[in-house]
Length: 216
Length: 219
Image (cartoon, rainbow over all chains, first blue to last red; front, side, top):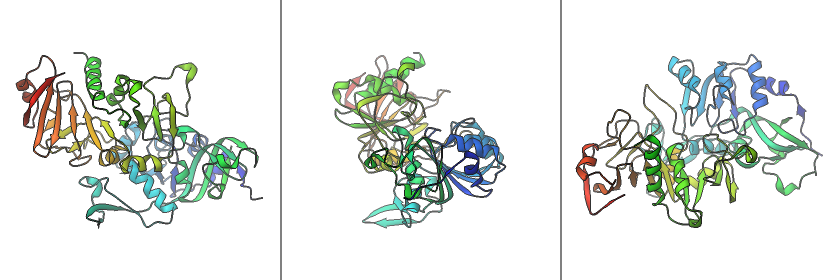
C-alpha cells in the first residue's frame, strides 16, 4: 500500500527554505494551513515568494508571514484587507504582483496540468496587459498568461487518509486542490486524518498522488 | 438621507433588475444588500467567487455558525438548501465562461463608454482586483451599484474614467440613489430618476452627458 509520511508542523516548516516560491492555499485565511504558517513564522526563513489568492489579514493567514517580513515577493489577486502589505509595498520592501483571481488560478492550474499557459480576455484594456503577448484566436483577442509553479505548496484539507487522498469541506476548497498540482513538494495540513478505506473512495476530491507529506 | 437608507434604496432598485431563475454574483460591500431585496420565490441563486452557489440573504447566528461557509470577504454566511461548493478553478470557469447572468459591483468611476474603474487609486489605495476583472468580462450583464457622487460630492459617472480600468466597455446599467442609467453604444440614457429629483438635478451631479429616455420613470 502506498502511504504518505505524516510529519510534525515544524518538519513541514523546515521543508521551506529562504528564497523559495511557496504557494499557500486559502481565501481570506479560510482553508489556509494555519498551523504550518505559524511554524513558518517561528522559523528564520525569509526572502520568500508567496503565491496566494490574497494576503489575508495582518494577524491571520499568510498575512502573518508578511507582518513578520519573511516575504520579498507576493503574487496575489487582493491585498486590501491587510494594511501591512500596502505599507511594505509602498516602502519598496515587498514586490506585489497583482493578478486577476481567475487568471491566477488558471496560471497555477496550467503549471500543474502541463500546459504552456492560458489565453484569457480578462485584463485586456487594463494595466494587466502591459508586457504580455496578445494572441488572436478565431477573430478574438486574448492575453497569453504564463504558468506559475512553486517549490512548495502548503495546503489545507478537512479530511485526509493515510494515502494522502483529500476532502476539502465547503468553501475551504478554493485554491487548495489546484495548488497541490503545481509544486515540487506538497504538504497538506488537515483537521482530521483517517485510515485508508475508512471513507468511501468516491468522496475524495484530490488523489493522494499529489501529496508528499501530511501534517495533522 | 442616511447612508443606510441610501444603500438600501440602491440595493432595492438593483434587485428589480434580476431575472427569476438567474445566477447572480454580488460584489463585496453594498451589493451584498441586494440579496435582502430578492424574494425566494424568484429562484435567484447568488454565487460567491471563493467557491459557492447559493449564498443566503440570512446572516448566520451564533448557534448556526459554520466557519467552513464563507463569502469572498472571508465572513461566515448562510447557505440556501440547494447550495453547492467548488474550487477556484471551477468558480472562475463559471464566471469567465458566461454562466453568470449578472454581476453587481461597486465602482470608483464609470464612464459613458461603460468603462469601469474599481480596483486601485494609485498612490492611495491598492486593494487589488480580486475577481472583479473576470466577473465583468464574463458576466452577461454588468450592473454597477454605487452612490452617485464620492465623499467630496464629486461625480462618479464621468465622460472618461481617470483611474486605471478594471475593464473596458463592460458596464450595462448604473444604479445610484439618484438615477438609473443605461449604457448604450450611443452613450448614457437616463431611464429613471429618484422621486423628488429633476433630470437637471441628476445631470448637474453627473459629469457624463445624459440623454433622457422618452419614457422617464421615477423610483
